[in-house]
Length: 233
Image (tube, rainbow, N blue to C red; front, top):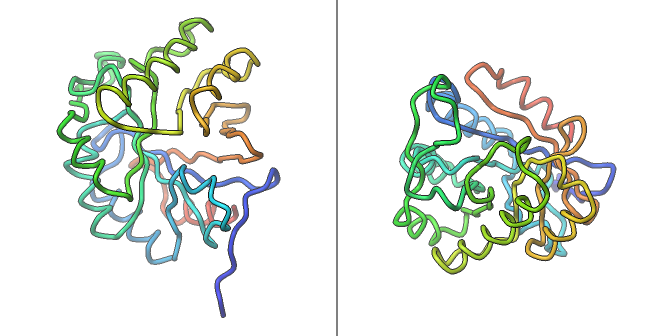
C-alpha cells in the first residue's frame, strides 16, 4: 500500500523533537541513538524548515529534529549518528557566541559546553541534510529583553550569519512572548520567511498556518511514549 502524504494545515501540528545538551543534564549519547534508530525503524521522515515552503506535500510521518543552542557536541557526537541513519536536522545558533561557550546558563546548571566553531559550521554547511536556525545574538533571557532589543537581535543575527559565516537561513528560533505582538512580528518577518516562535500552551507558531508541537527530549523521556505522541500528529 502506498504511503499517504501529509499536508500541514491550521488543524495539524508538525511534531518537533527538541534536543539540548548531550550529557547528564540533557540526553545521553546512547539515548539519542536509540531515539534516532526508532524514528528510522518506524518510518518517520525528518524534514527541514526549507521543506515548509515546497509545493509538494510533506511525507507521511514528518518530524523536525532540532538541536538548540549550537553546542559543539552536535558536531562531534550527534552529527555522526545523523549521518549513520541518513537523517536531517536543524541546528540553533546563538550567532554572537559561535566559537565560545554557553555563557547564558547559570553556573549551578552544570559544566559549560563549547559551542560550534566557524570551522564546524563550514563543514556542516556542505551537508544538505543540515539546516541552520538563528537563535539571536547571545541567547539572552527572554524575560529581560524589551521589543527594541528583540528587533535588534533579529536583524543583527541575520546579518552576521550571512556576512561573517556565509550562512543563509530563513528560520528564527526566538522564544519570547513579545514576538507575538504585531510590531516585533512584522520586524521578524522582514528578515525571516519562517519564524519558530513561542506561543501559548507550548505550541510553536510559524506563518502560513503552520503549527509546530514541541517535544523536549531528555534522558528521562520514554521513547515509546514519544513515538506514540508524535505519531498522532
